[in-house]
Length: 132
Image (cartoon, rainbow, N blue to C red; front, side, top):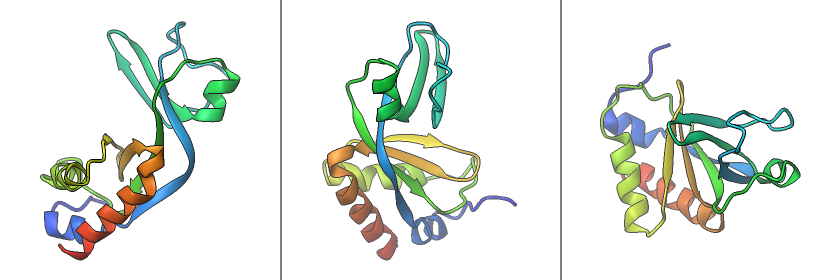
């Protein structure tokens, strides 16, 4: 199934969903994914392997972190070459003063926002969808 490319359709249909739990970004010193963690995102960078995983797994594995996030999934199936969705979402959250880290999956876009503001961020995104 091909993802949606029309920006207006993407915005109207994004249906932001807050996933349960607290998520953190960490870089294991070993450069490997510890066997007892299940990351939701991995990014390989020259400086090391970044993992995004549930906070309780980082604590149990003694992995350091300093940012706790809420994970929002935009439920619309966006095409990887769609133009404008990230910009529109980022602008709306910027206007609300909410920081956001965006990760694109094959089917959906995922946003990691400060945990304590995750509910507010969902509200901002729902308003953006209604106004599009």
